[in-house]
Image (cartoon, rainbow, N blue to C red; front, top):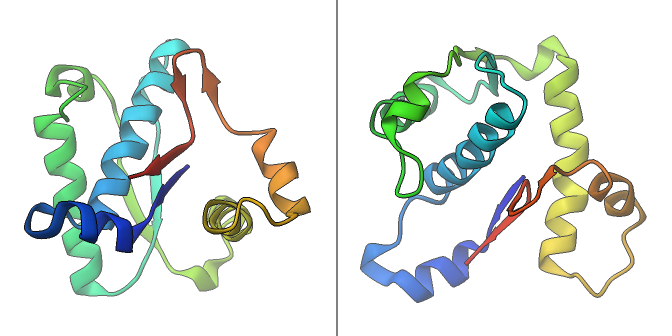
Length: 142
């Protein structure tokens, strides 16, 4: 799970600020890579909610570039060992994984933006966030 404080990111990095959605994908895949390695797995179909032809193409390009080039922390060789086909599905198909992601996203965003406020839904979500020792499944940036 990744949360990007977009305004803080723009203010801090100004002209060097990256696209927050691309940045979130990068952070998420660093964690996914760790999760899969810990379990000796290499196959993970990735289902993204379709947003439109151009948006889907842009995300697909970023996704495959990420797998081909790696990140600052994880090299391309590690990503190349993964089999992660990317599929785009319409929200109207009511895919369980997409619905679950939606159910987790709002309480998580509320927790990031207002951590002092009571948030019972996040209390349920946080019990299921990956904790792989020195790598957590929860990233808030910056």
